[in-house]
Amino acid sequence: MRRLAATSLLAVAGCNAHQSALAPFGEEADDTLTLTIVLAIGALILASGVAVLAWRAARSPKGAISHEGGMKLVLWLGAVGPAVILTVLLLFALPAMRPMSAAPGDLRIRVEGEQFWWRVRYDPAGEAPLTAANEIRVPVGRTVVFDLTATDVIHSFWIPGLAGKMDMIPGRTNRLVVRARKAGIYRGVCTEFCGLSHALMAFDVIAMEPAAFDAWLADARRASDGNEADAGGAAAFAAHGCGACHAIRGTAHDARIGPDLSRFGERRTLGAGILQPTIENTAAFIRDPHRFKPGARMPAYKSMAPADAEAIARYLKGLP
Ligand code: CUA
Image (cartoon, rainbow, N blue to C red; front, side, top):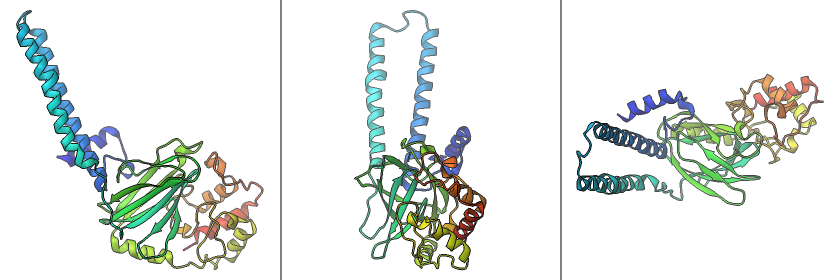
């Protein structure tokens, strides 16, 4: 029944299951959807009942209900009924409002909101952290603790299919505990106005089977050689000073100002969820980021020779 209701709600909303609270893949979003469906059906039943009563009242002759009868109706439908309904709803909703609990050994992922991208750091218990950006991978069935904060202004972290929203506030760490229920690729967004490119700051969430996630993490941790096979691209990256802001694991570039570019080749998007990461788009973004992302902190490199921008883009695309 719930699946049918969710599917019809999806059809009504014309939503994409990739980013929708109506197509949940996590336990908290499941509870929220159940609550939404119960509320919607309950509201429909109540509204129909009131409509039927109003229709009957309009058709009955004047004085059909005595004053005493009218007072009773008001008492039952106006006071007792709502009190019972609200109490039942409260009892039903309270368990869903309880945050999921986390254990010390759970995987922690720190996500920092930046203008306008996401700094990601995986912190598995007992292992060294791993930095990434603009893409978050989570293991299915395991509890994941998101530690959420921001660097400059307030952002809000929302993966509609996984859980509710959580603010990201500079100087404070908010915690969101989640558990993905099925593998797939989903989308998260910023839901707090944070500047010119607020609407241009999204990210992919890749829910993976636990073994695949562990293998990915181990593989990502291995220092890449920074795609040294592409010596020309590596030289252009260094010569234009890209390493002053960006880091690539396994190379001398380890700055933390801009997004970490390690394993750029496997990213599904460019510019935090806004562009296809093709060589053409990457080169265009390097030369003029503000064309795609107004207000971004990255300086424009309009004077860079297109061939150099393309060499850097090809080098990044080749990062293992
Ligand atoms: Cu970040 Cu809106």
